Length: 314
Image (cartoon, rainbow, N blue to C red; front, side, top):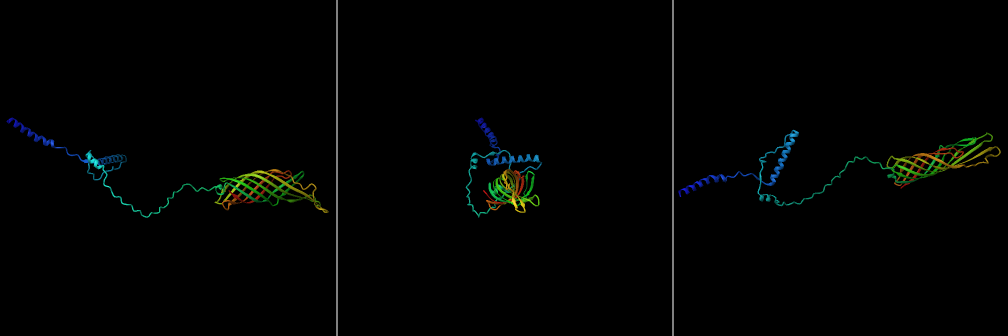
C-alpha cells in the first residue's frame, strides 16, 4: 500500500513538472487580414524593384518612412474573419449633385499644317463655257503675185466675229471656235503717170479651229490664259483693177473684178484676261495672232486681233 502511494505521489510530481512545460505555447504569430497581407507583398515588390533600379542608375532607393511592421511571414486570420472582411461596408448616402450653370466652353481649334489650296478655274467658273467675241483686225500685210505683177498690200482696220465653245479641266481649257473676218487693203496705184492703174482688194475669211490652253488664277475673279489653235478656213480675196484716162476717167478692167477663193490652213496663239462678273457670266479681253496659208495669187498673211467677249459659264 505504501508502495502504491509512493508511486502515485511520484507521478503527481512529474505531472507538475511536465504540464507547465506542455502548457507553454509558442508566442502567437501576428494575425493580419488577407487584404493587408497582399498589400504587404505588393509593397515589398515595389521596394525590391526600387532597389534594382537604384543599383542601375546609381540613385538612392525608395525607403519606407516610420515603418514599424515587419515583413516577416505571417499567418492569415481565421476563415470566419476573412469572410467578414469581404462583406460590403455600410451603404453611404449619395448626396444629390447640384448642377451649376453650364459654362460655355471655347471651341477647340486645331492648327492645320496644310497650306491654303487655290481653287482651279474649273471650280470657280464651271465645266463648260460659251463666249461670243468681237475683234478688231490691224497690221495685216500680204502680197499679190500674178505673173510678172508683184504688189505689196497693206491692210486697213478690219473686224471679226467669233463664237467659242469650251471645256475646262482644272486649269486646262479646250475649245472649238468658229468665226468670220473681213478686211480691206489699201488701194495701190501703179503704171504710167498719164494712164495710171489702181488696184483695190478686200478679203473675207470663214474659219473653224480647235484650241487648247492653260489658265492661271490671279485672284478669286481674275485669271489669265494662253492657248494655241489650229484649223481650216475658207479664204476669199476679191480684187479689181481700174485704169485712168483723161476722157473717161477711172474705168474698171474688163477682166475684173475677180474673187479667187480656196480652203487654207490656219494657226496661231492667243493671250488674254478673263474676269468673272457673277457666278455664270464672265468677260474676256485679249490678243490673238492668226496665220493664213496662201490663196492662189495672194500669199500667206498674219492677222493681229484685239478681242472683247462676254460669255456664260455652266
